[in-house]
Image (cartoon, rainbow over the protein chains, first blue to last red):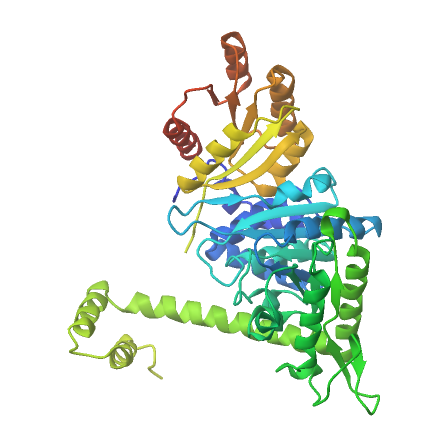
Length: 351
Length: 133
């Protein structure tokens, strides 16, 4: 729906004022800026440039896992512990957009009702709007808004993820991958994808039968080593968390495997302790800066890709594109040569 | 690039547990391309308005079958104003006697729907309300 809402208009005139209010922690301004990020466009970019100097403060923690593993419930319990520690918490919870209607049913708040009137907790539900990596296009920008607004901890809950929704690892400093009992054997644990992005593995619903089996399978998976150089030193690492190599010098990280029962709040404090240890590890070893640079690099490339694409398409007539598609279908031209020809004709390469 | 969706908060304030209607409406709005934030049962007016604020919704839909609507709805509308959200449209579904309908409409409730309402009517009226201004 390209509805022009009754509330959407005035923001354009007062964008800077809204930014000032958001930076001061005003919740309504924060909410409206997140909506602006979802809409995207030039105004969103302007606001992001204003916010950028104020970002980079928060510890961003991602929570991912299959549908029904208890992500929302765990996020709520984590937020409660952070609140007991006196920290305010931002939460971004992503649920899928229907590929058919474009609508979405965002139900994560149901599990977070105990946080509903705590003004130190800001919860935003987000629909994926067509993105497939487990987050919405605007999730990272929404996190920027919360970060700039002064939330020291931001929890990002992905859509119910399968094996390849790994975008969260690019947004979060610490990624928790949630598993639950009876969700597959050790072969599942060896497969590439979501388990590889885990900084911490949590087996939720640990009161159910089989919890220990999956812990064992995950530990065995970790014993087999990993492609991630951060904690691969050609040896099996028995310890969890921060690990020194044989010389006692080189620090690395082996994801701890924890059991939680979010519904009863069990294991959550231990989980948060592991999150904190991971953060400390990243700060101490320079991994934090390294990842920050990776993230910036990633973001820059994404923006370049998008902008170049937009500029290119501006220079190519729609009829040209349609004709080219026809030629490709008719096997008169292959798509690679066509792309080369269109880029050359666009004049973007000149100079 | 710019993309705007109608965002609707669906809540069931009060103490009755009959949430089928709210879920059916939420589903219909989803299928009409809207983003529905469903917060479910036993919501206080404070919880509803705080969620409306954080989620930056266009519409708050309340489902009330307990008879408590004359206590709850005015409170929600009052709080919305207090939070600076008086531009959020309030819709109401449930068992609402005719004499209360008039009063609630007077208070600013944009649509009131009893049993037998066509889902498509709700969708159209929300769409009209949000795009009208």
